[in-house]
Amino acid sequence: EKRRAVLDVVGAYFRWKNAETRHLQQRSGLAGPYQKDFFAASREWVLHVWELKGAPATWPAQLEAYYREQPVFALLGGVGRGDWRPVHDFCERKEVPCIFPNTDEPVVSPNGFYSLYLSKGLTVEAEALARYLREQTSPGEGARVVQVYRDVGGGRVLARAFHRALRENGAANLLDRPVRAKKKLTPAFWKSLLEEERPSALVLWLGVEDLRALESAAARAGTVRRLFLSYTLLGENPRLPADGFRDRIYLTYPLALPQAAQPHVYRARAWLRSKGVGGAREERLRLNTYFALSVADHSLMRLAGNFFRDYFVECVEQETESTANPGVFPHMSLGPGQRFASKGCYIVRPSAGTQGGLEAASSWLVP
Image (cartoon, rainbow, N blue to C red):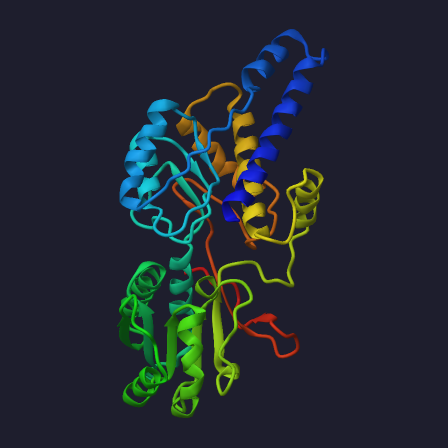
C-alpha cells in the first residue's frame, strides 16, 4: 500500500508536469532570447521506477544494475523500510541527488552531500527525548532512566541515539535493557524489571505487541513517574497501555500536531484529489511525495538549462523553505550543509478530552 501511494502521486505529478510543459512550449508569446532560455530549461520528465527486492545486502548490486541500464539525473521521493544506508552510499558514490525519501532510518552521520532527507527519523525522536529529560530534571535530582528496546532495526537506532545524547550531558542514571529479536515480553518480565530497577522514567522503544503484558505489572510501577514511547514505532492510532499507566504516558512525535494543520495542506489535498490520488490512507506519505516533487520542480526551473547535479542540490537547499509546506512537519528548511529539512520533535501525551487524541507536553524541541 505504501508503494502504491508513492507511485500514484509520482505518476500523477509527472503527467501533470509534462502536460504543463507541452502547453507552455506551444505558446507563441515568448520573444527570441527568452524562448531559447525557456526551451533550454523545460524538459519532459521521464520516470524510471527502481524497485529493490530481497535483503539490503543485495541492494547495492541492484542499484548498480539499474544505473547501468539507465543513468538518471536524480532519485525523487521513494519509500523504504529499515536502514537507508545502501541507497545513501550508492547516491554519494555515483553523485546522484536523492531528494526526500520516506525513511525512518536515514544516514545521520556522517552527512553526505547528495542525500537530503525530510528529517532524522527515529534518531531525532531519541535526541529530542534526551533534551526533554535534561530540561525536566532538576540539578542533583538524578532521575533513574531504564530503556527497554529490541536490539534490532528501529529499536536499536533509537536506543543508541538516546544513550549517546543522554550520556553526553550526564543528565541521568541510564540503564539499558536490550531484548533479543524473538524474545516474548511476558508479565513476569515486566514485574521483574520494575521490582529490580525501580525506574523513575521508563523508556520503551517497542511496538504495540510488546506492550500488551505491561498492564499486568502496573502494581509494581509505583516508582515510574513517566513512561515514554515512540509514536513511529507504535504506528498510526496505537493502543496504549491503559490500566494504571494512562496518566504517565508520553510519546515522541516528530510530526506537526494534528490540531495545527498548515494552511497549505488544503491546497495539496485539493491537488491530490483533482488528480485522483488523494485519500486518508497513507496521506502523510502522499503529502511528503508531493512536497519532494514540488521542491524538485522548482529547483529544476532555477537551473535554467544548466543541468548540473551539484547546482541542483544547491537549488533544493534554497527552495525547500520557500516551497509550500503541505503540513506533515511543522517547519521545513535547508541551508548549505544541512541535510534534514525538519529538525525537531514534540513530546506529546494522550488528550484527556478526546479518545485517541494527542496534546503537546513540550514545545517543538530541536536537539
